[in-house]
Image (cartoon, rainbow, N blue to C red; front, side):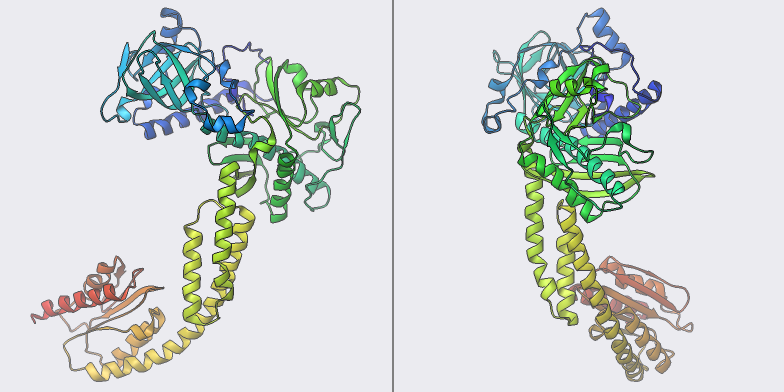
Length: 600
């Protein structure tokens, strides 16, 4: 995980060790990320000044007011082992510590107290600073905890909507929901651990995704382009699961490694950026998902421990972000093998690569991989040159995505069985497109299958529409000639031609033969269908002083939310709206427009 997990953590002893790259460049990237994050929070919260303490105010707290750095070591003390109890426990009773209010920052000054208001807004947000906390502040891609700060003596409650780190201090950002909170108040920091658990699912899922992508994609490179989720595994004499086909850092050739470029951990999804050029094919996605599911099925334990940095960097298979600076000691998180065994493996004369996800990370994680319960990749795309992004879901979010996919697959059965007849296929394609456009996150392999089905149906529909269009153009030419002959003596003509089914080419053909049959007749023709919308054409001879083609057309399609235009005698327009009643109203408006111009 990136070094943001460690930035500003004064409770750790830093040693200025650079893994590789330039420290100042890393700081610059971090500051830019935090600035962007705080700006987003500013826009969302409406009181961005509470999301960070200015440097002079941090100095005032530390030096003048002697407020110590926030001790957030209790953020790792939570009942993650017992998932069932975690989901039902009282957050106040579950709090591992009690804390004291050291300062209240309102964005401009330190206030002695904060009181609940009837209808709080973003302007009522403040940041409460405690001497210690069990809240996890946003760092390293993992968003901050939410919850409550509860004064048991007065029953005052402060609702925490975000947790941010500013220098050595943790800011509990929110507003009073009941009573008054003052400096010096002792309270209980009550984290929303149900939400924390969802975040932990996606953070541990991010580690496993990192591990799985690397194993699948590099093995694919070495096997000539065939994706595989199954390496050759065995146990060594110490019981550590060794992957004989797994990849040792020292054996990697230039361009082979899958380097992490960024991550984001949220409640309902995770996002992981890595160095790569080629899109993930379906077989790649399935192989990656299978690596993660294998870890879930085996309930691979999650271990974490602080280790001297030099020792940690020797662990085979360790994932460290290129160019980042890490604290010493550093927290190692492993999914699969305990840290002591990994350190011992690193100290052996011929260390082998364990089949485990091993990273430097300060985030909150699950007790074991089975608590992910499910995992699926939702999307993948290129976000920059040489950088690809994978979005995935774990736990309930993954289950919901799979459930929605199953419902869509069932709905798409009618598309597959629809007769290759124009009206029926148009209806089914429109229905399928609407379902897919309105769907939530879906497992990517399944979504690609649905998209392919829809594209095939649209292709078939297009062929039917082309054939129909040819027939309609023939009919339209004849219709236009008949209309010109019939109405040539009228001052103007406004007509809806529903028989042309909203086909713009057919309408154009009708307008041309009408004009040939009645060259002095001003006319406005409309055709529409609910599926394709409305097409309209207006023609006004140069000799006609009462009407202007573009203005006349706009009076019609403008009522349907459409647009049009033209120069001289002819104007063309269209609208997405094609409902019969609304089209009739637009035709009536065009008729009234012309009648007014003629003084009728």
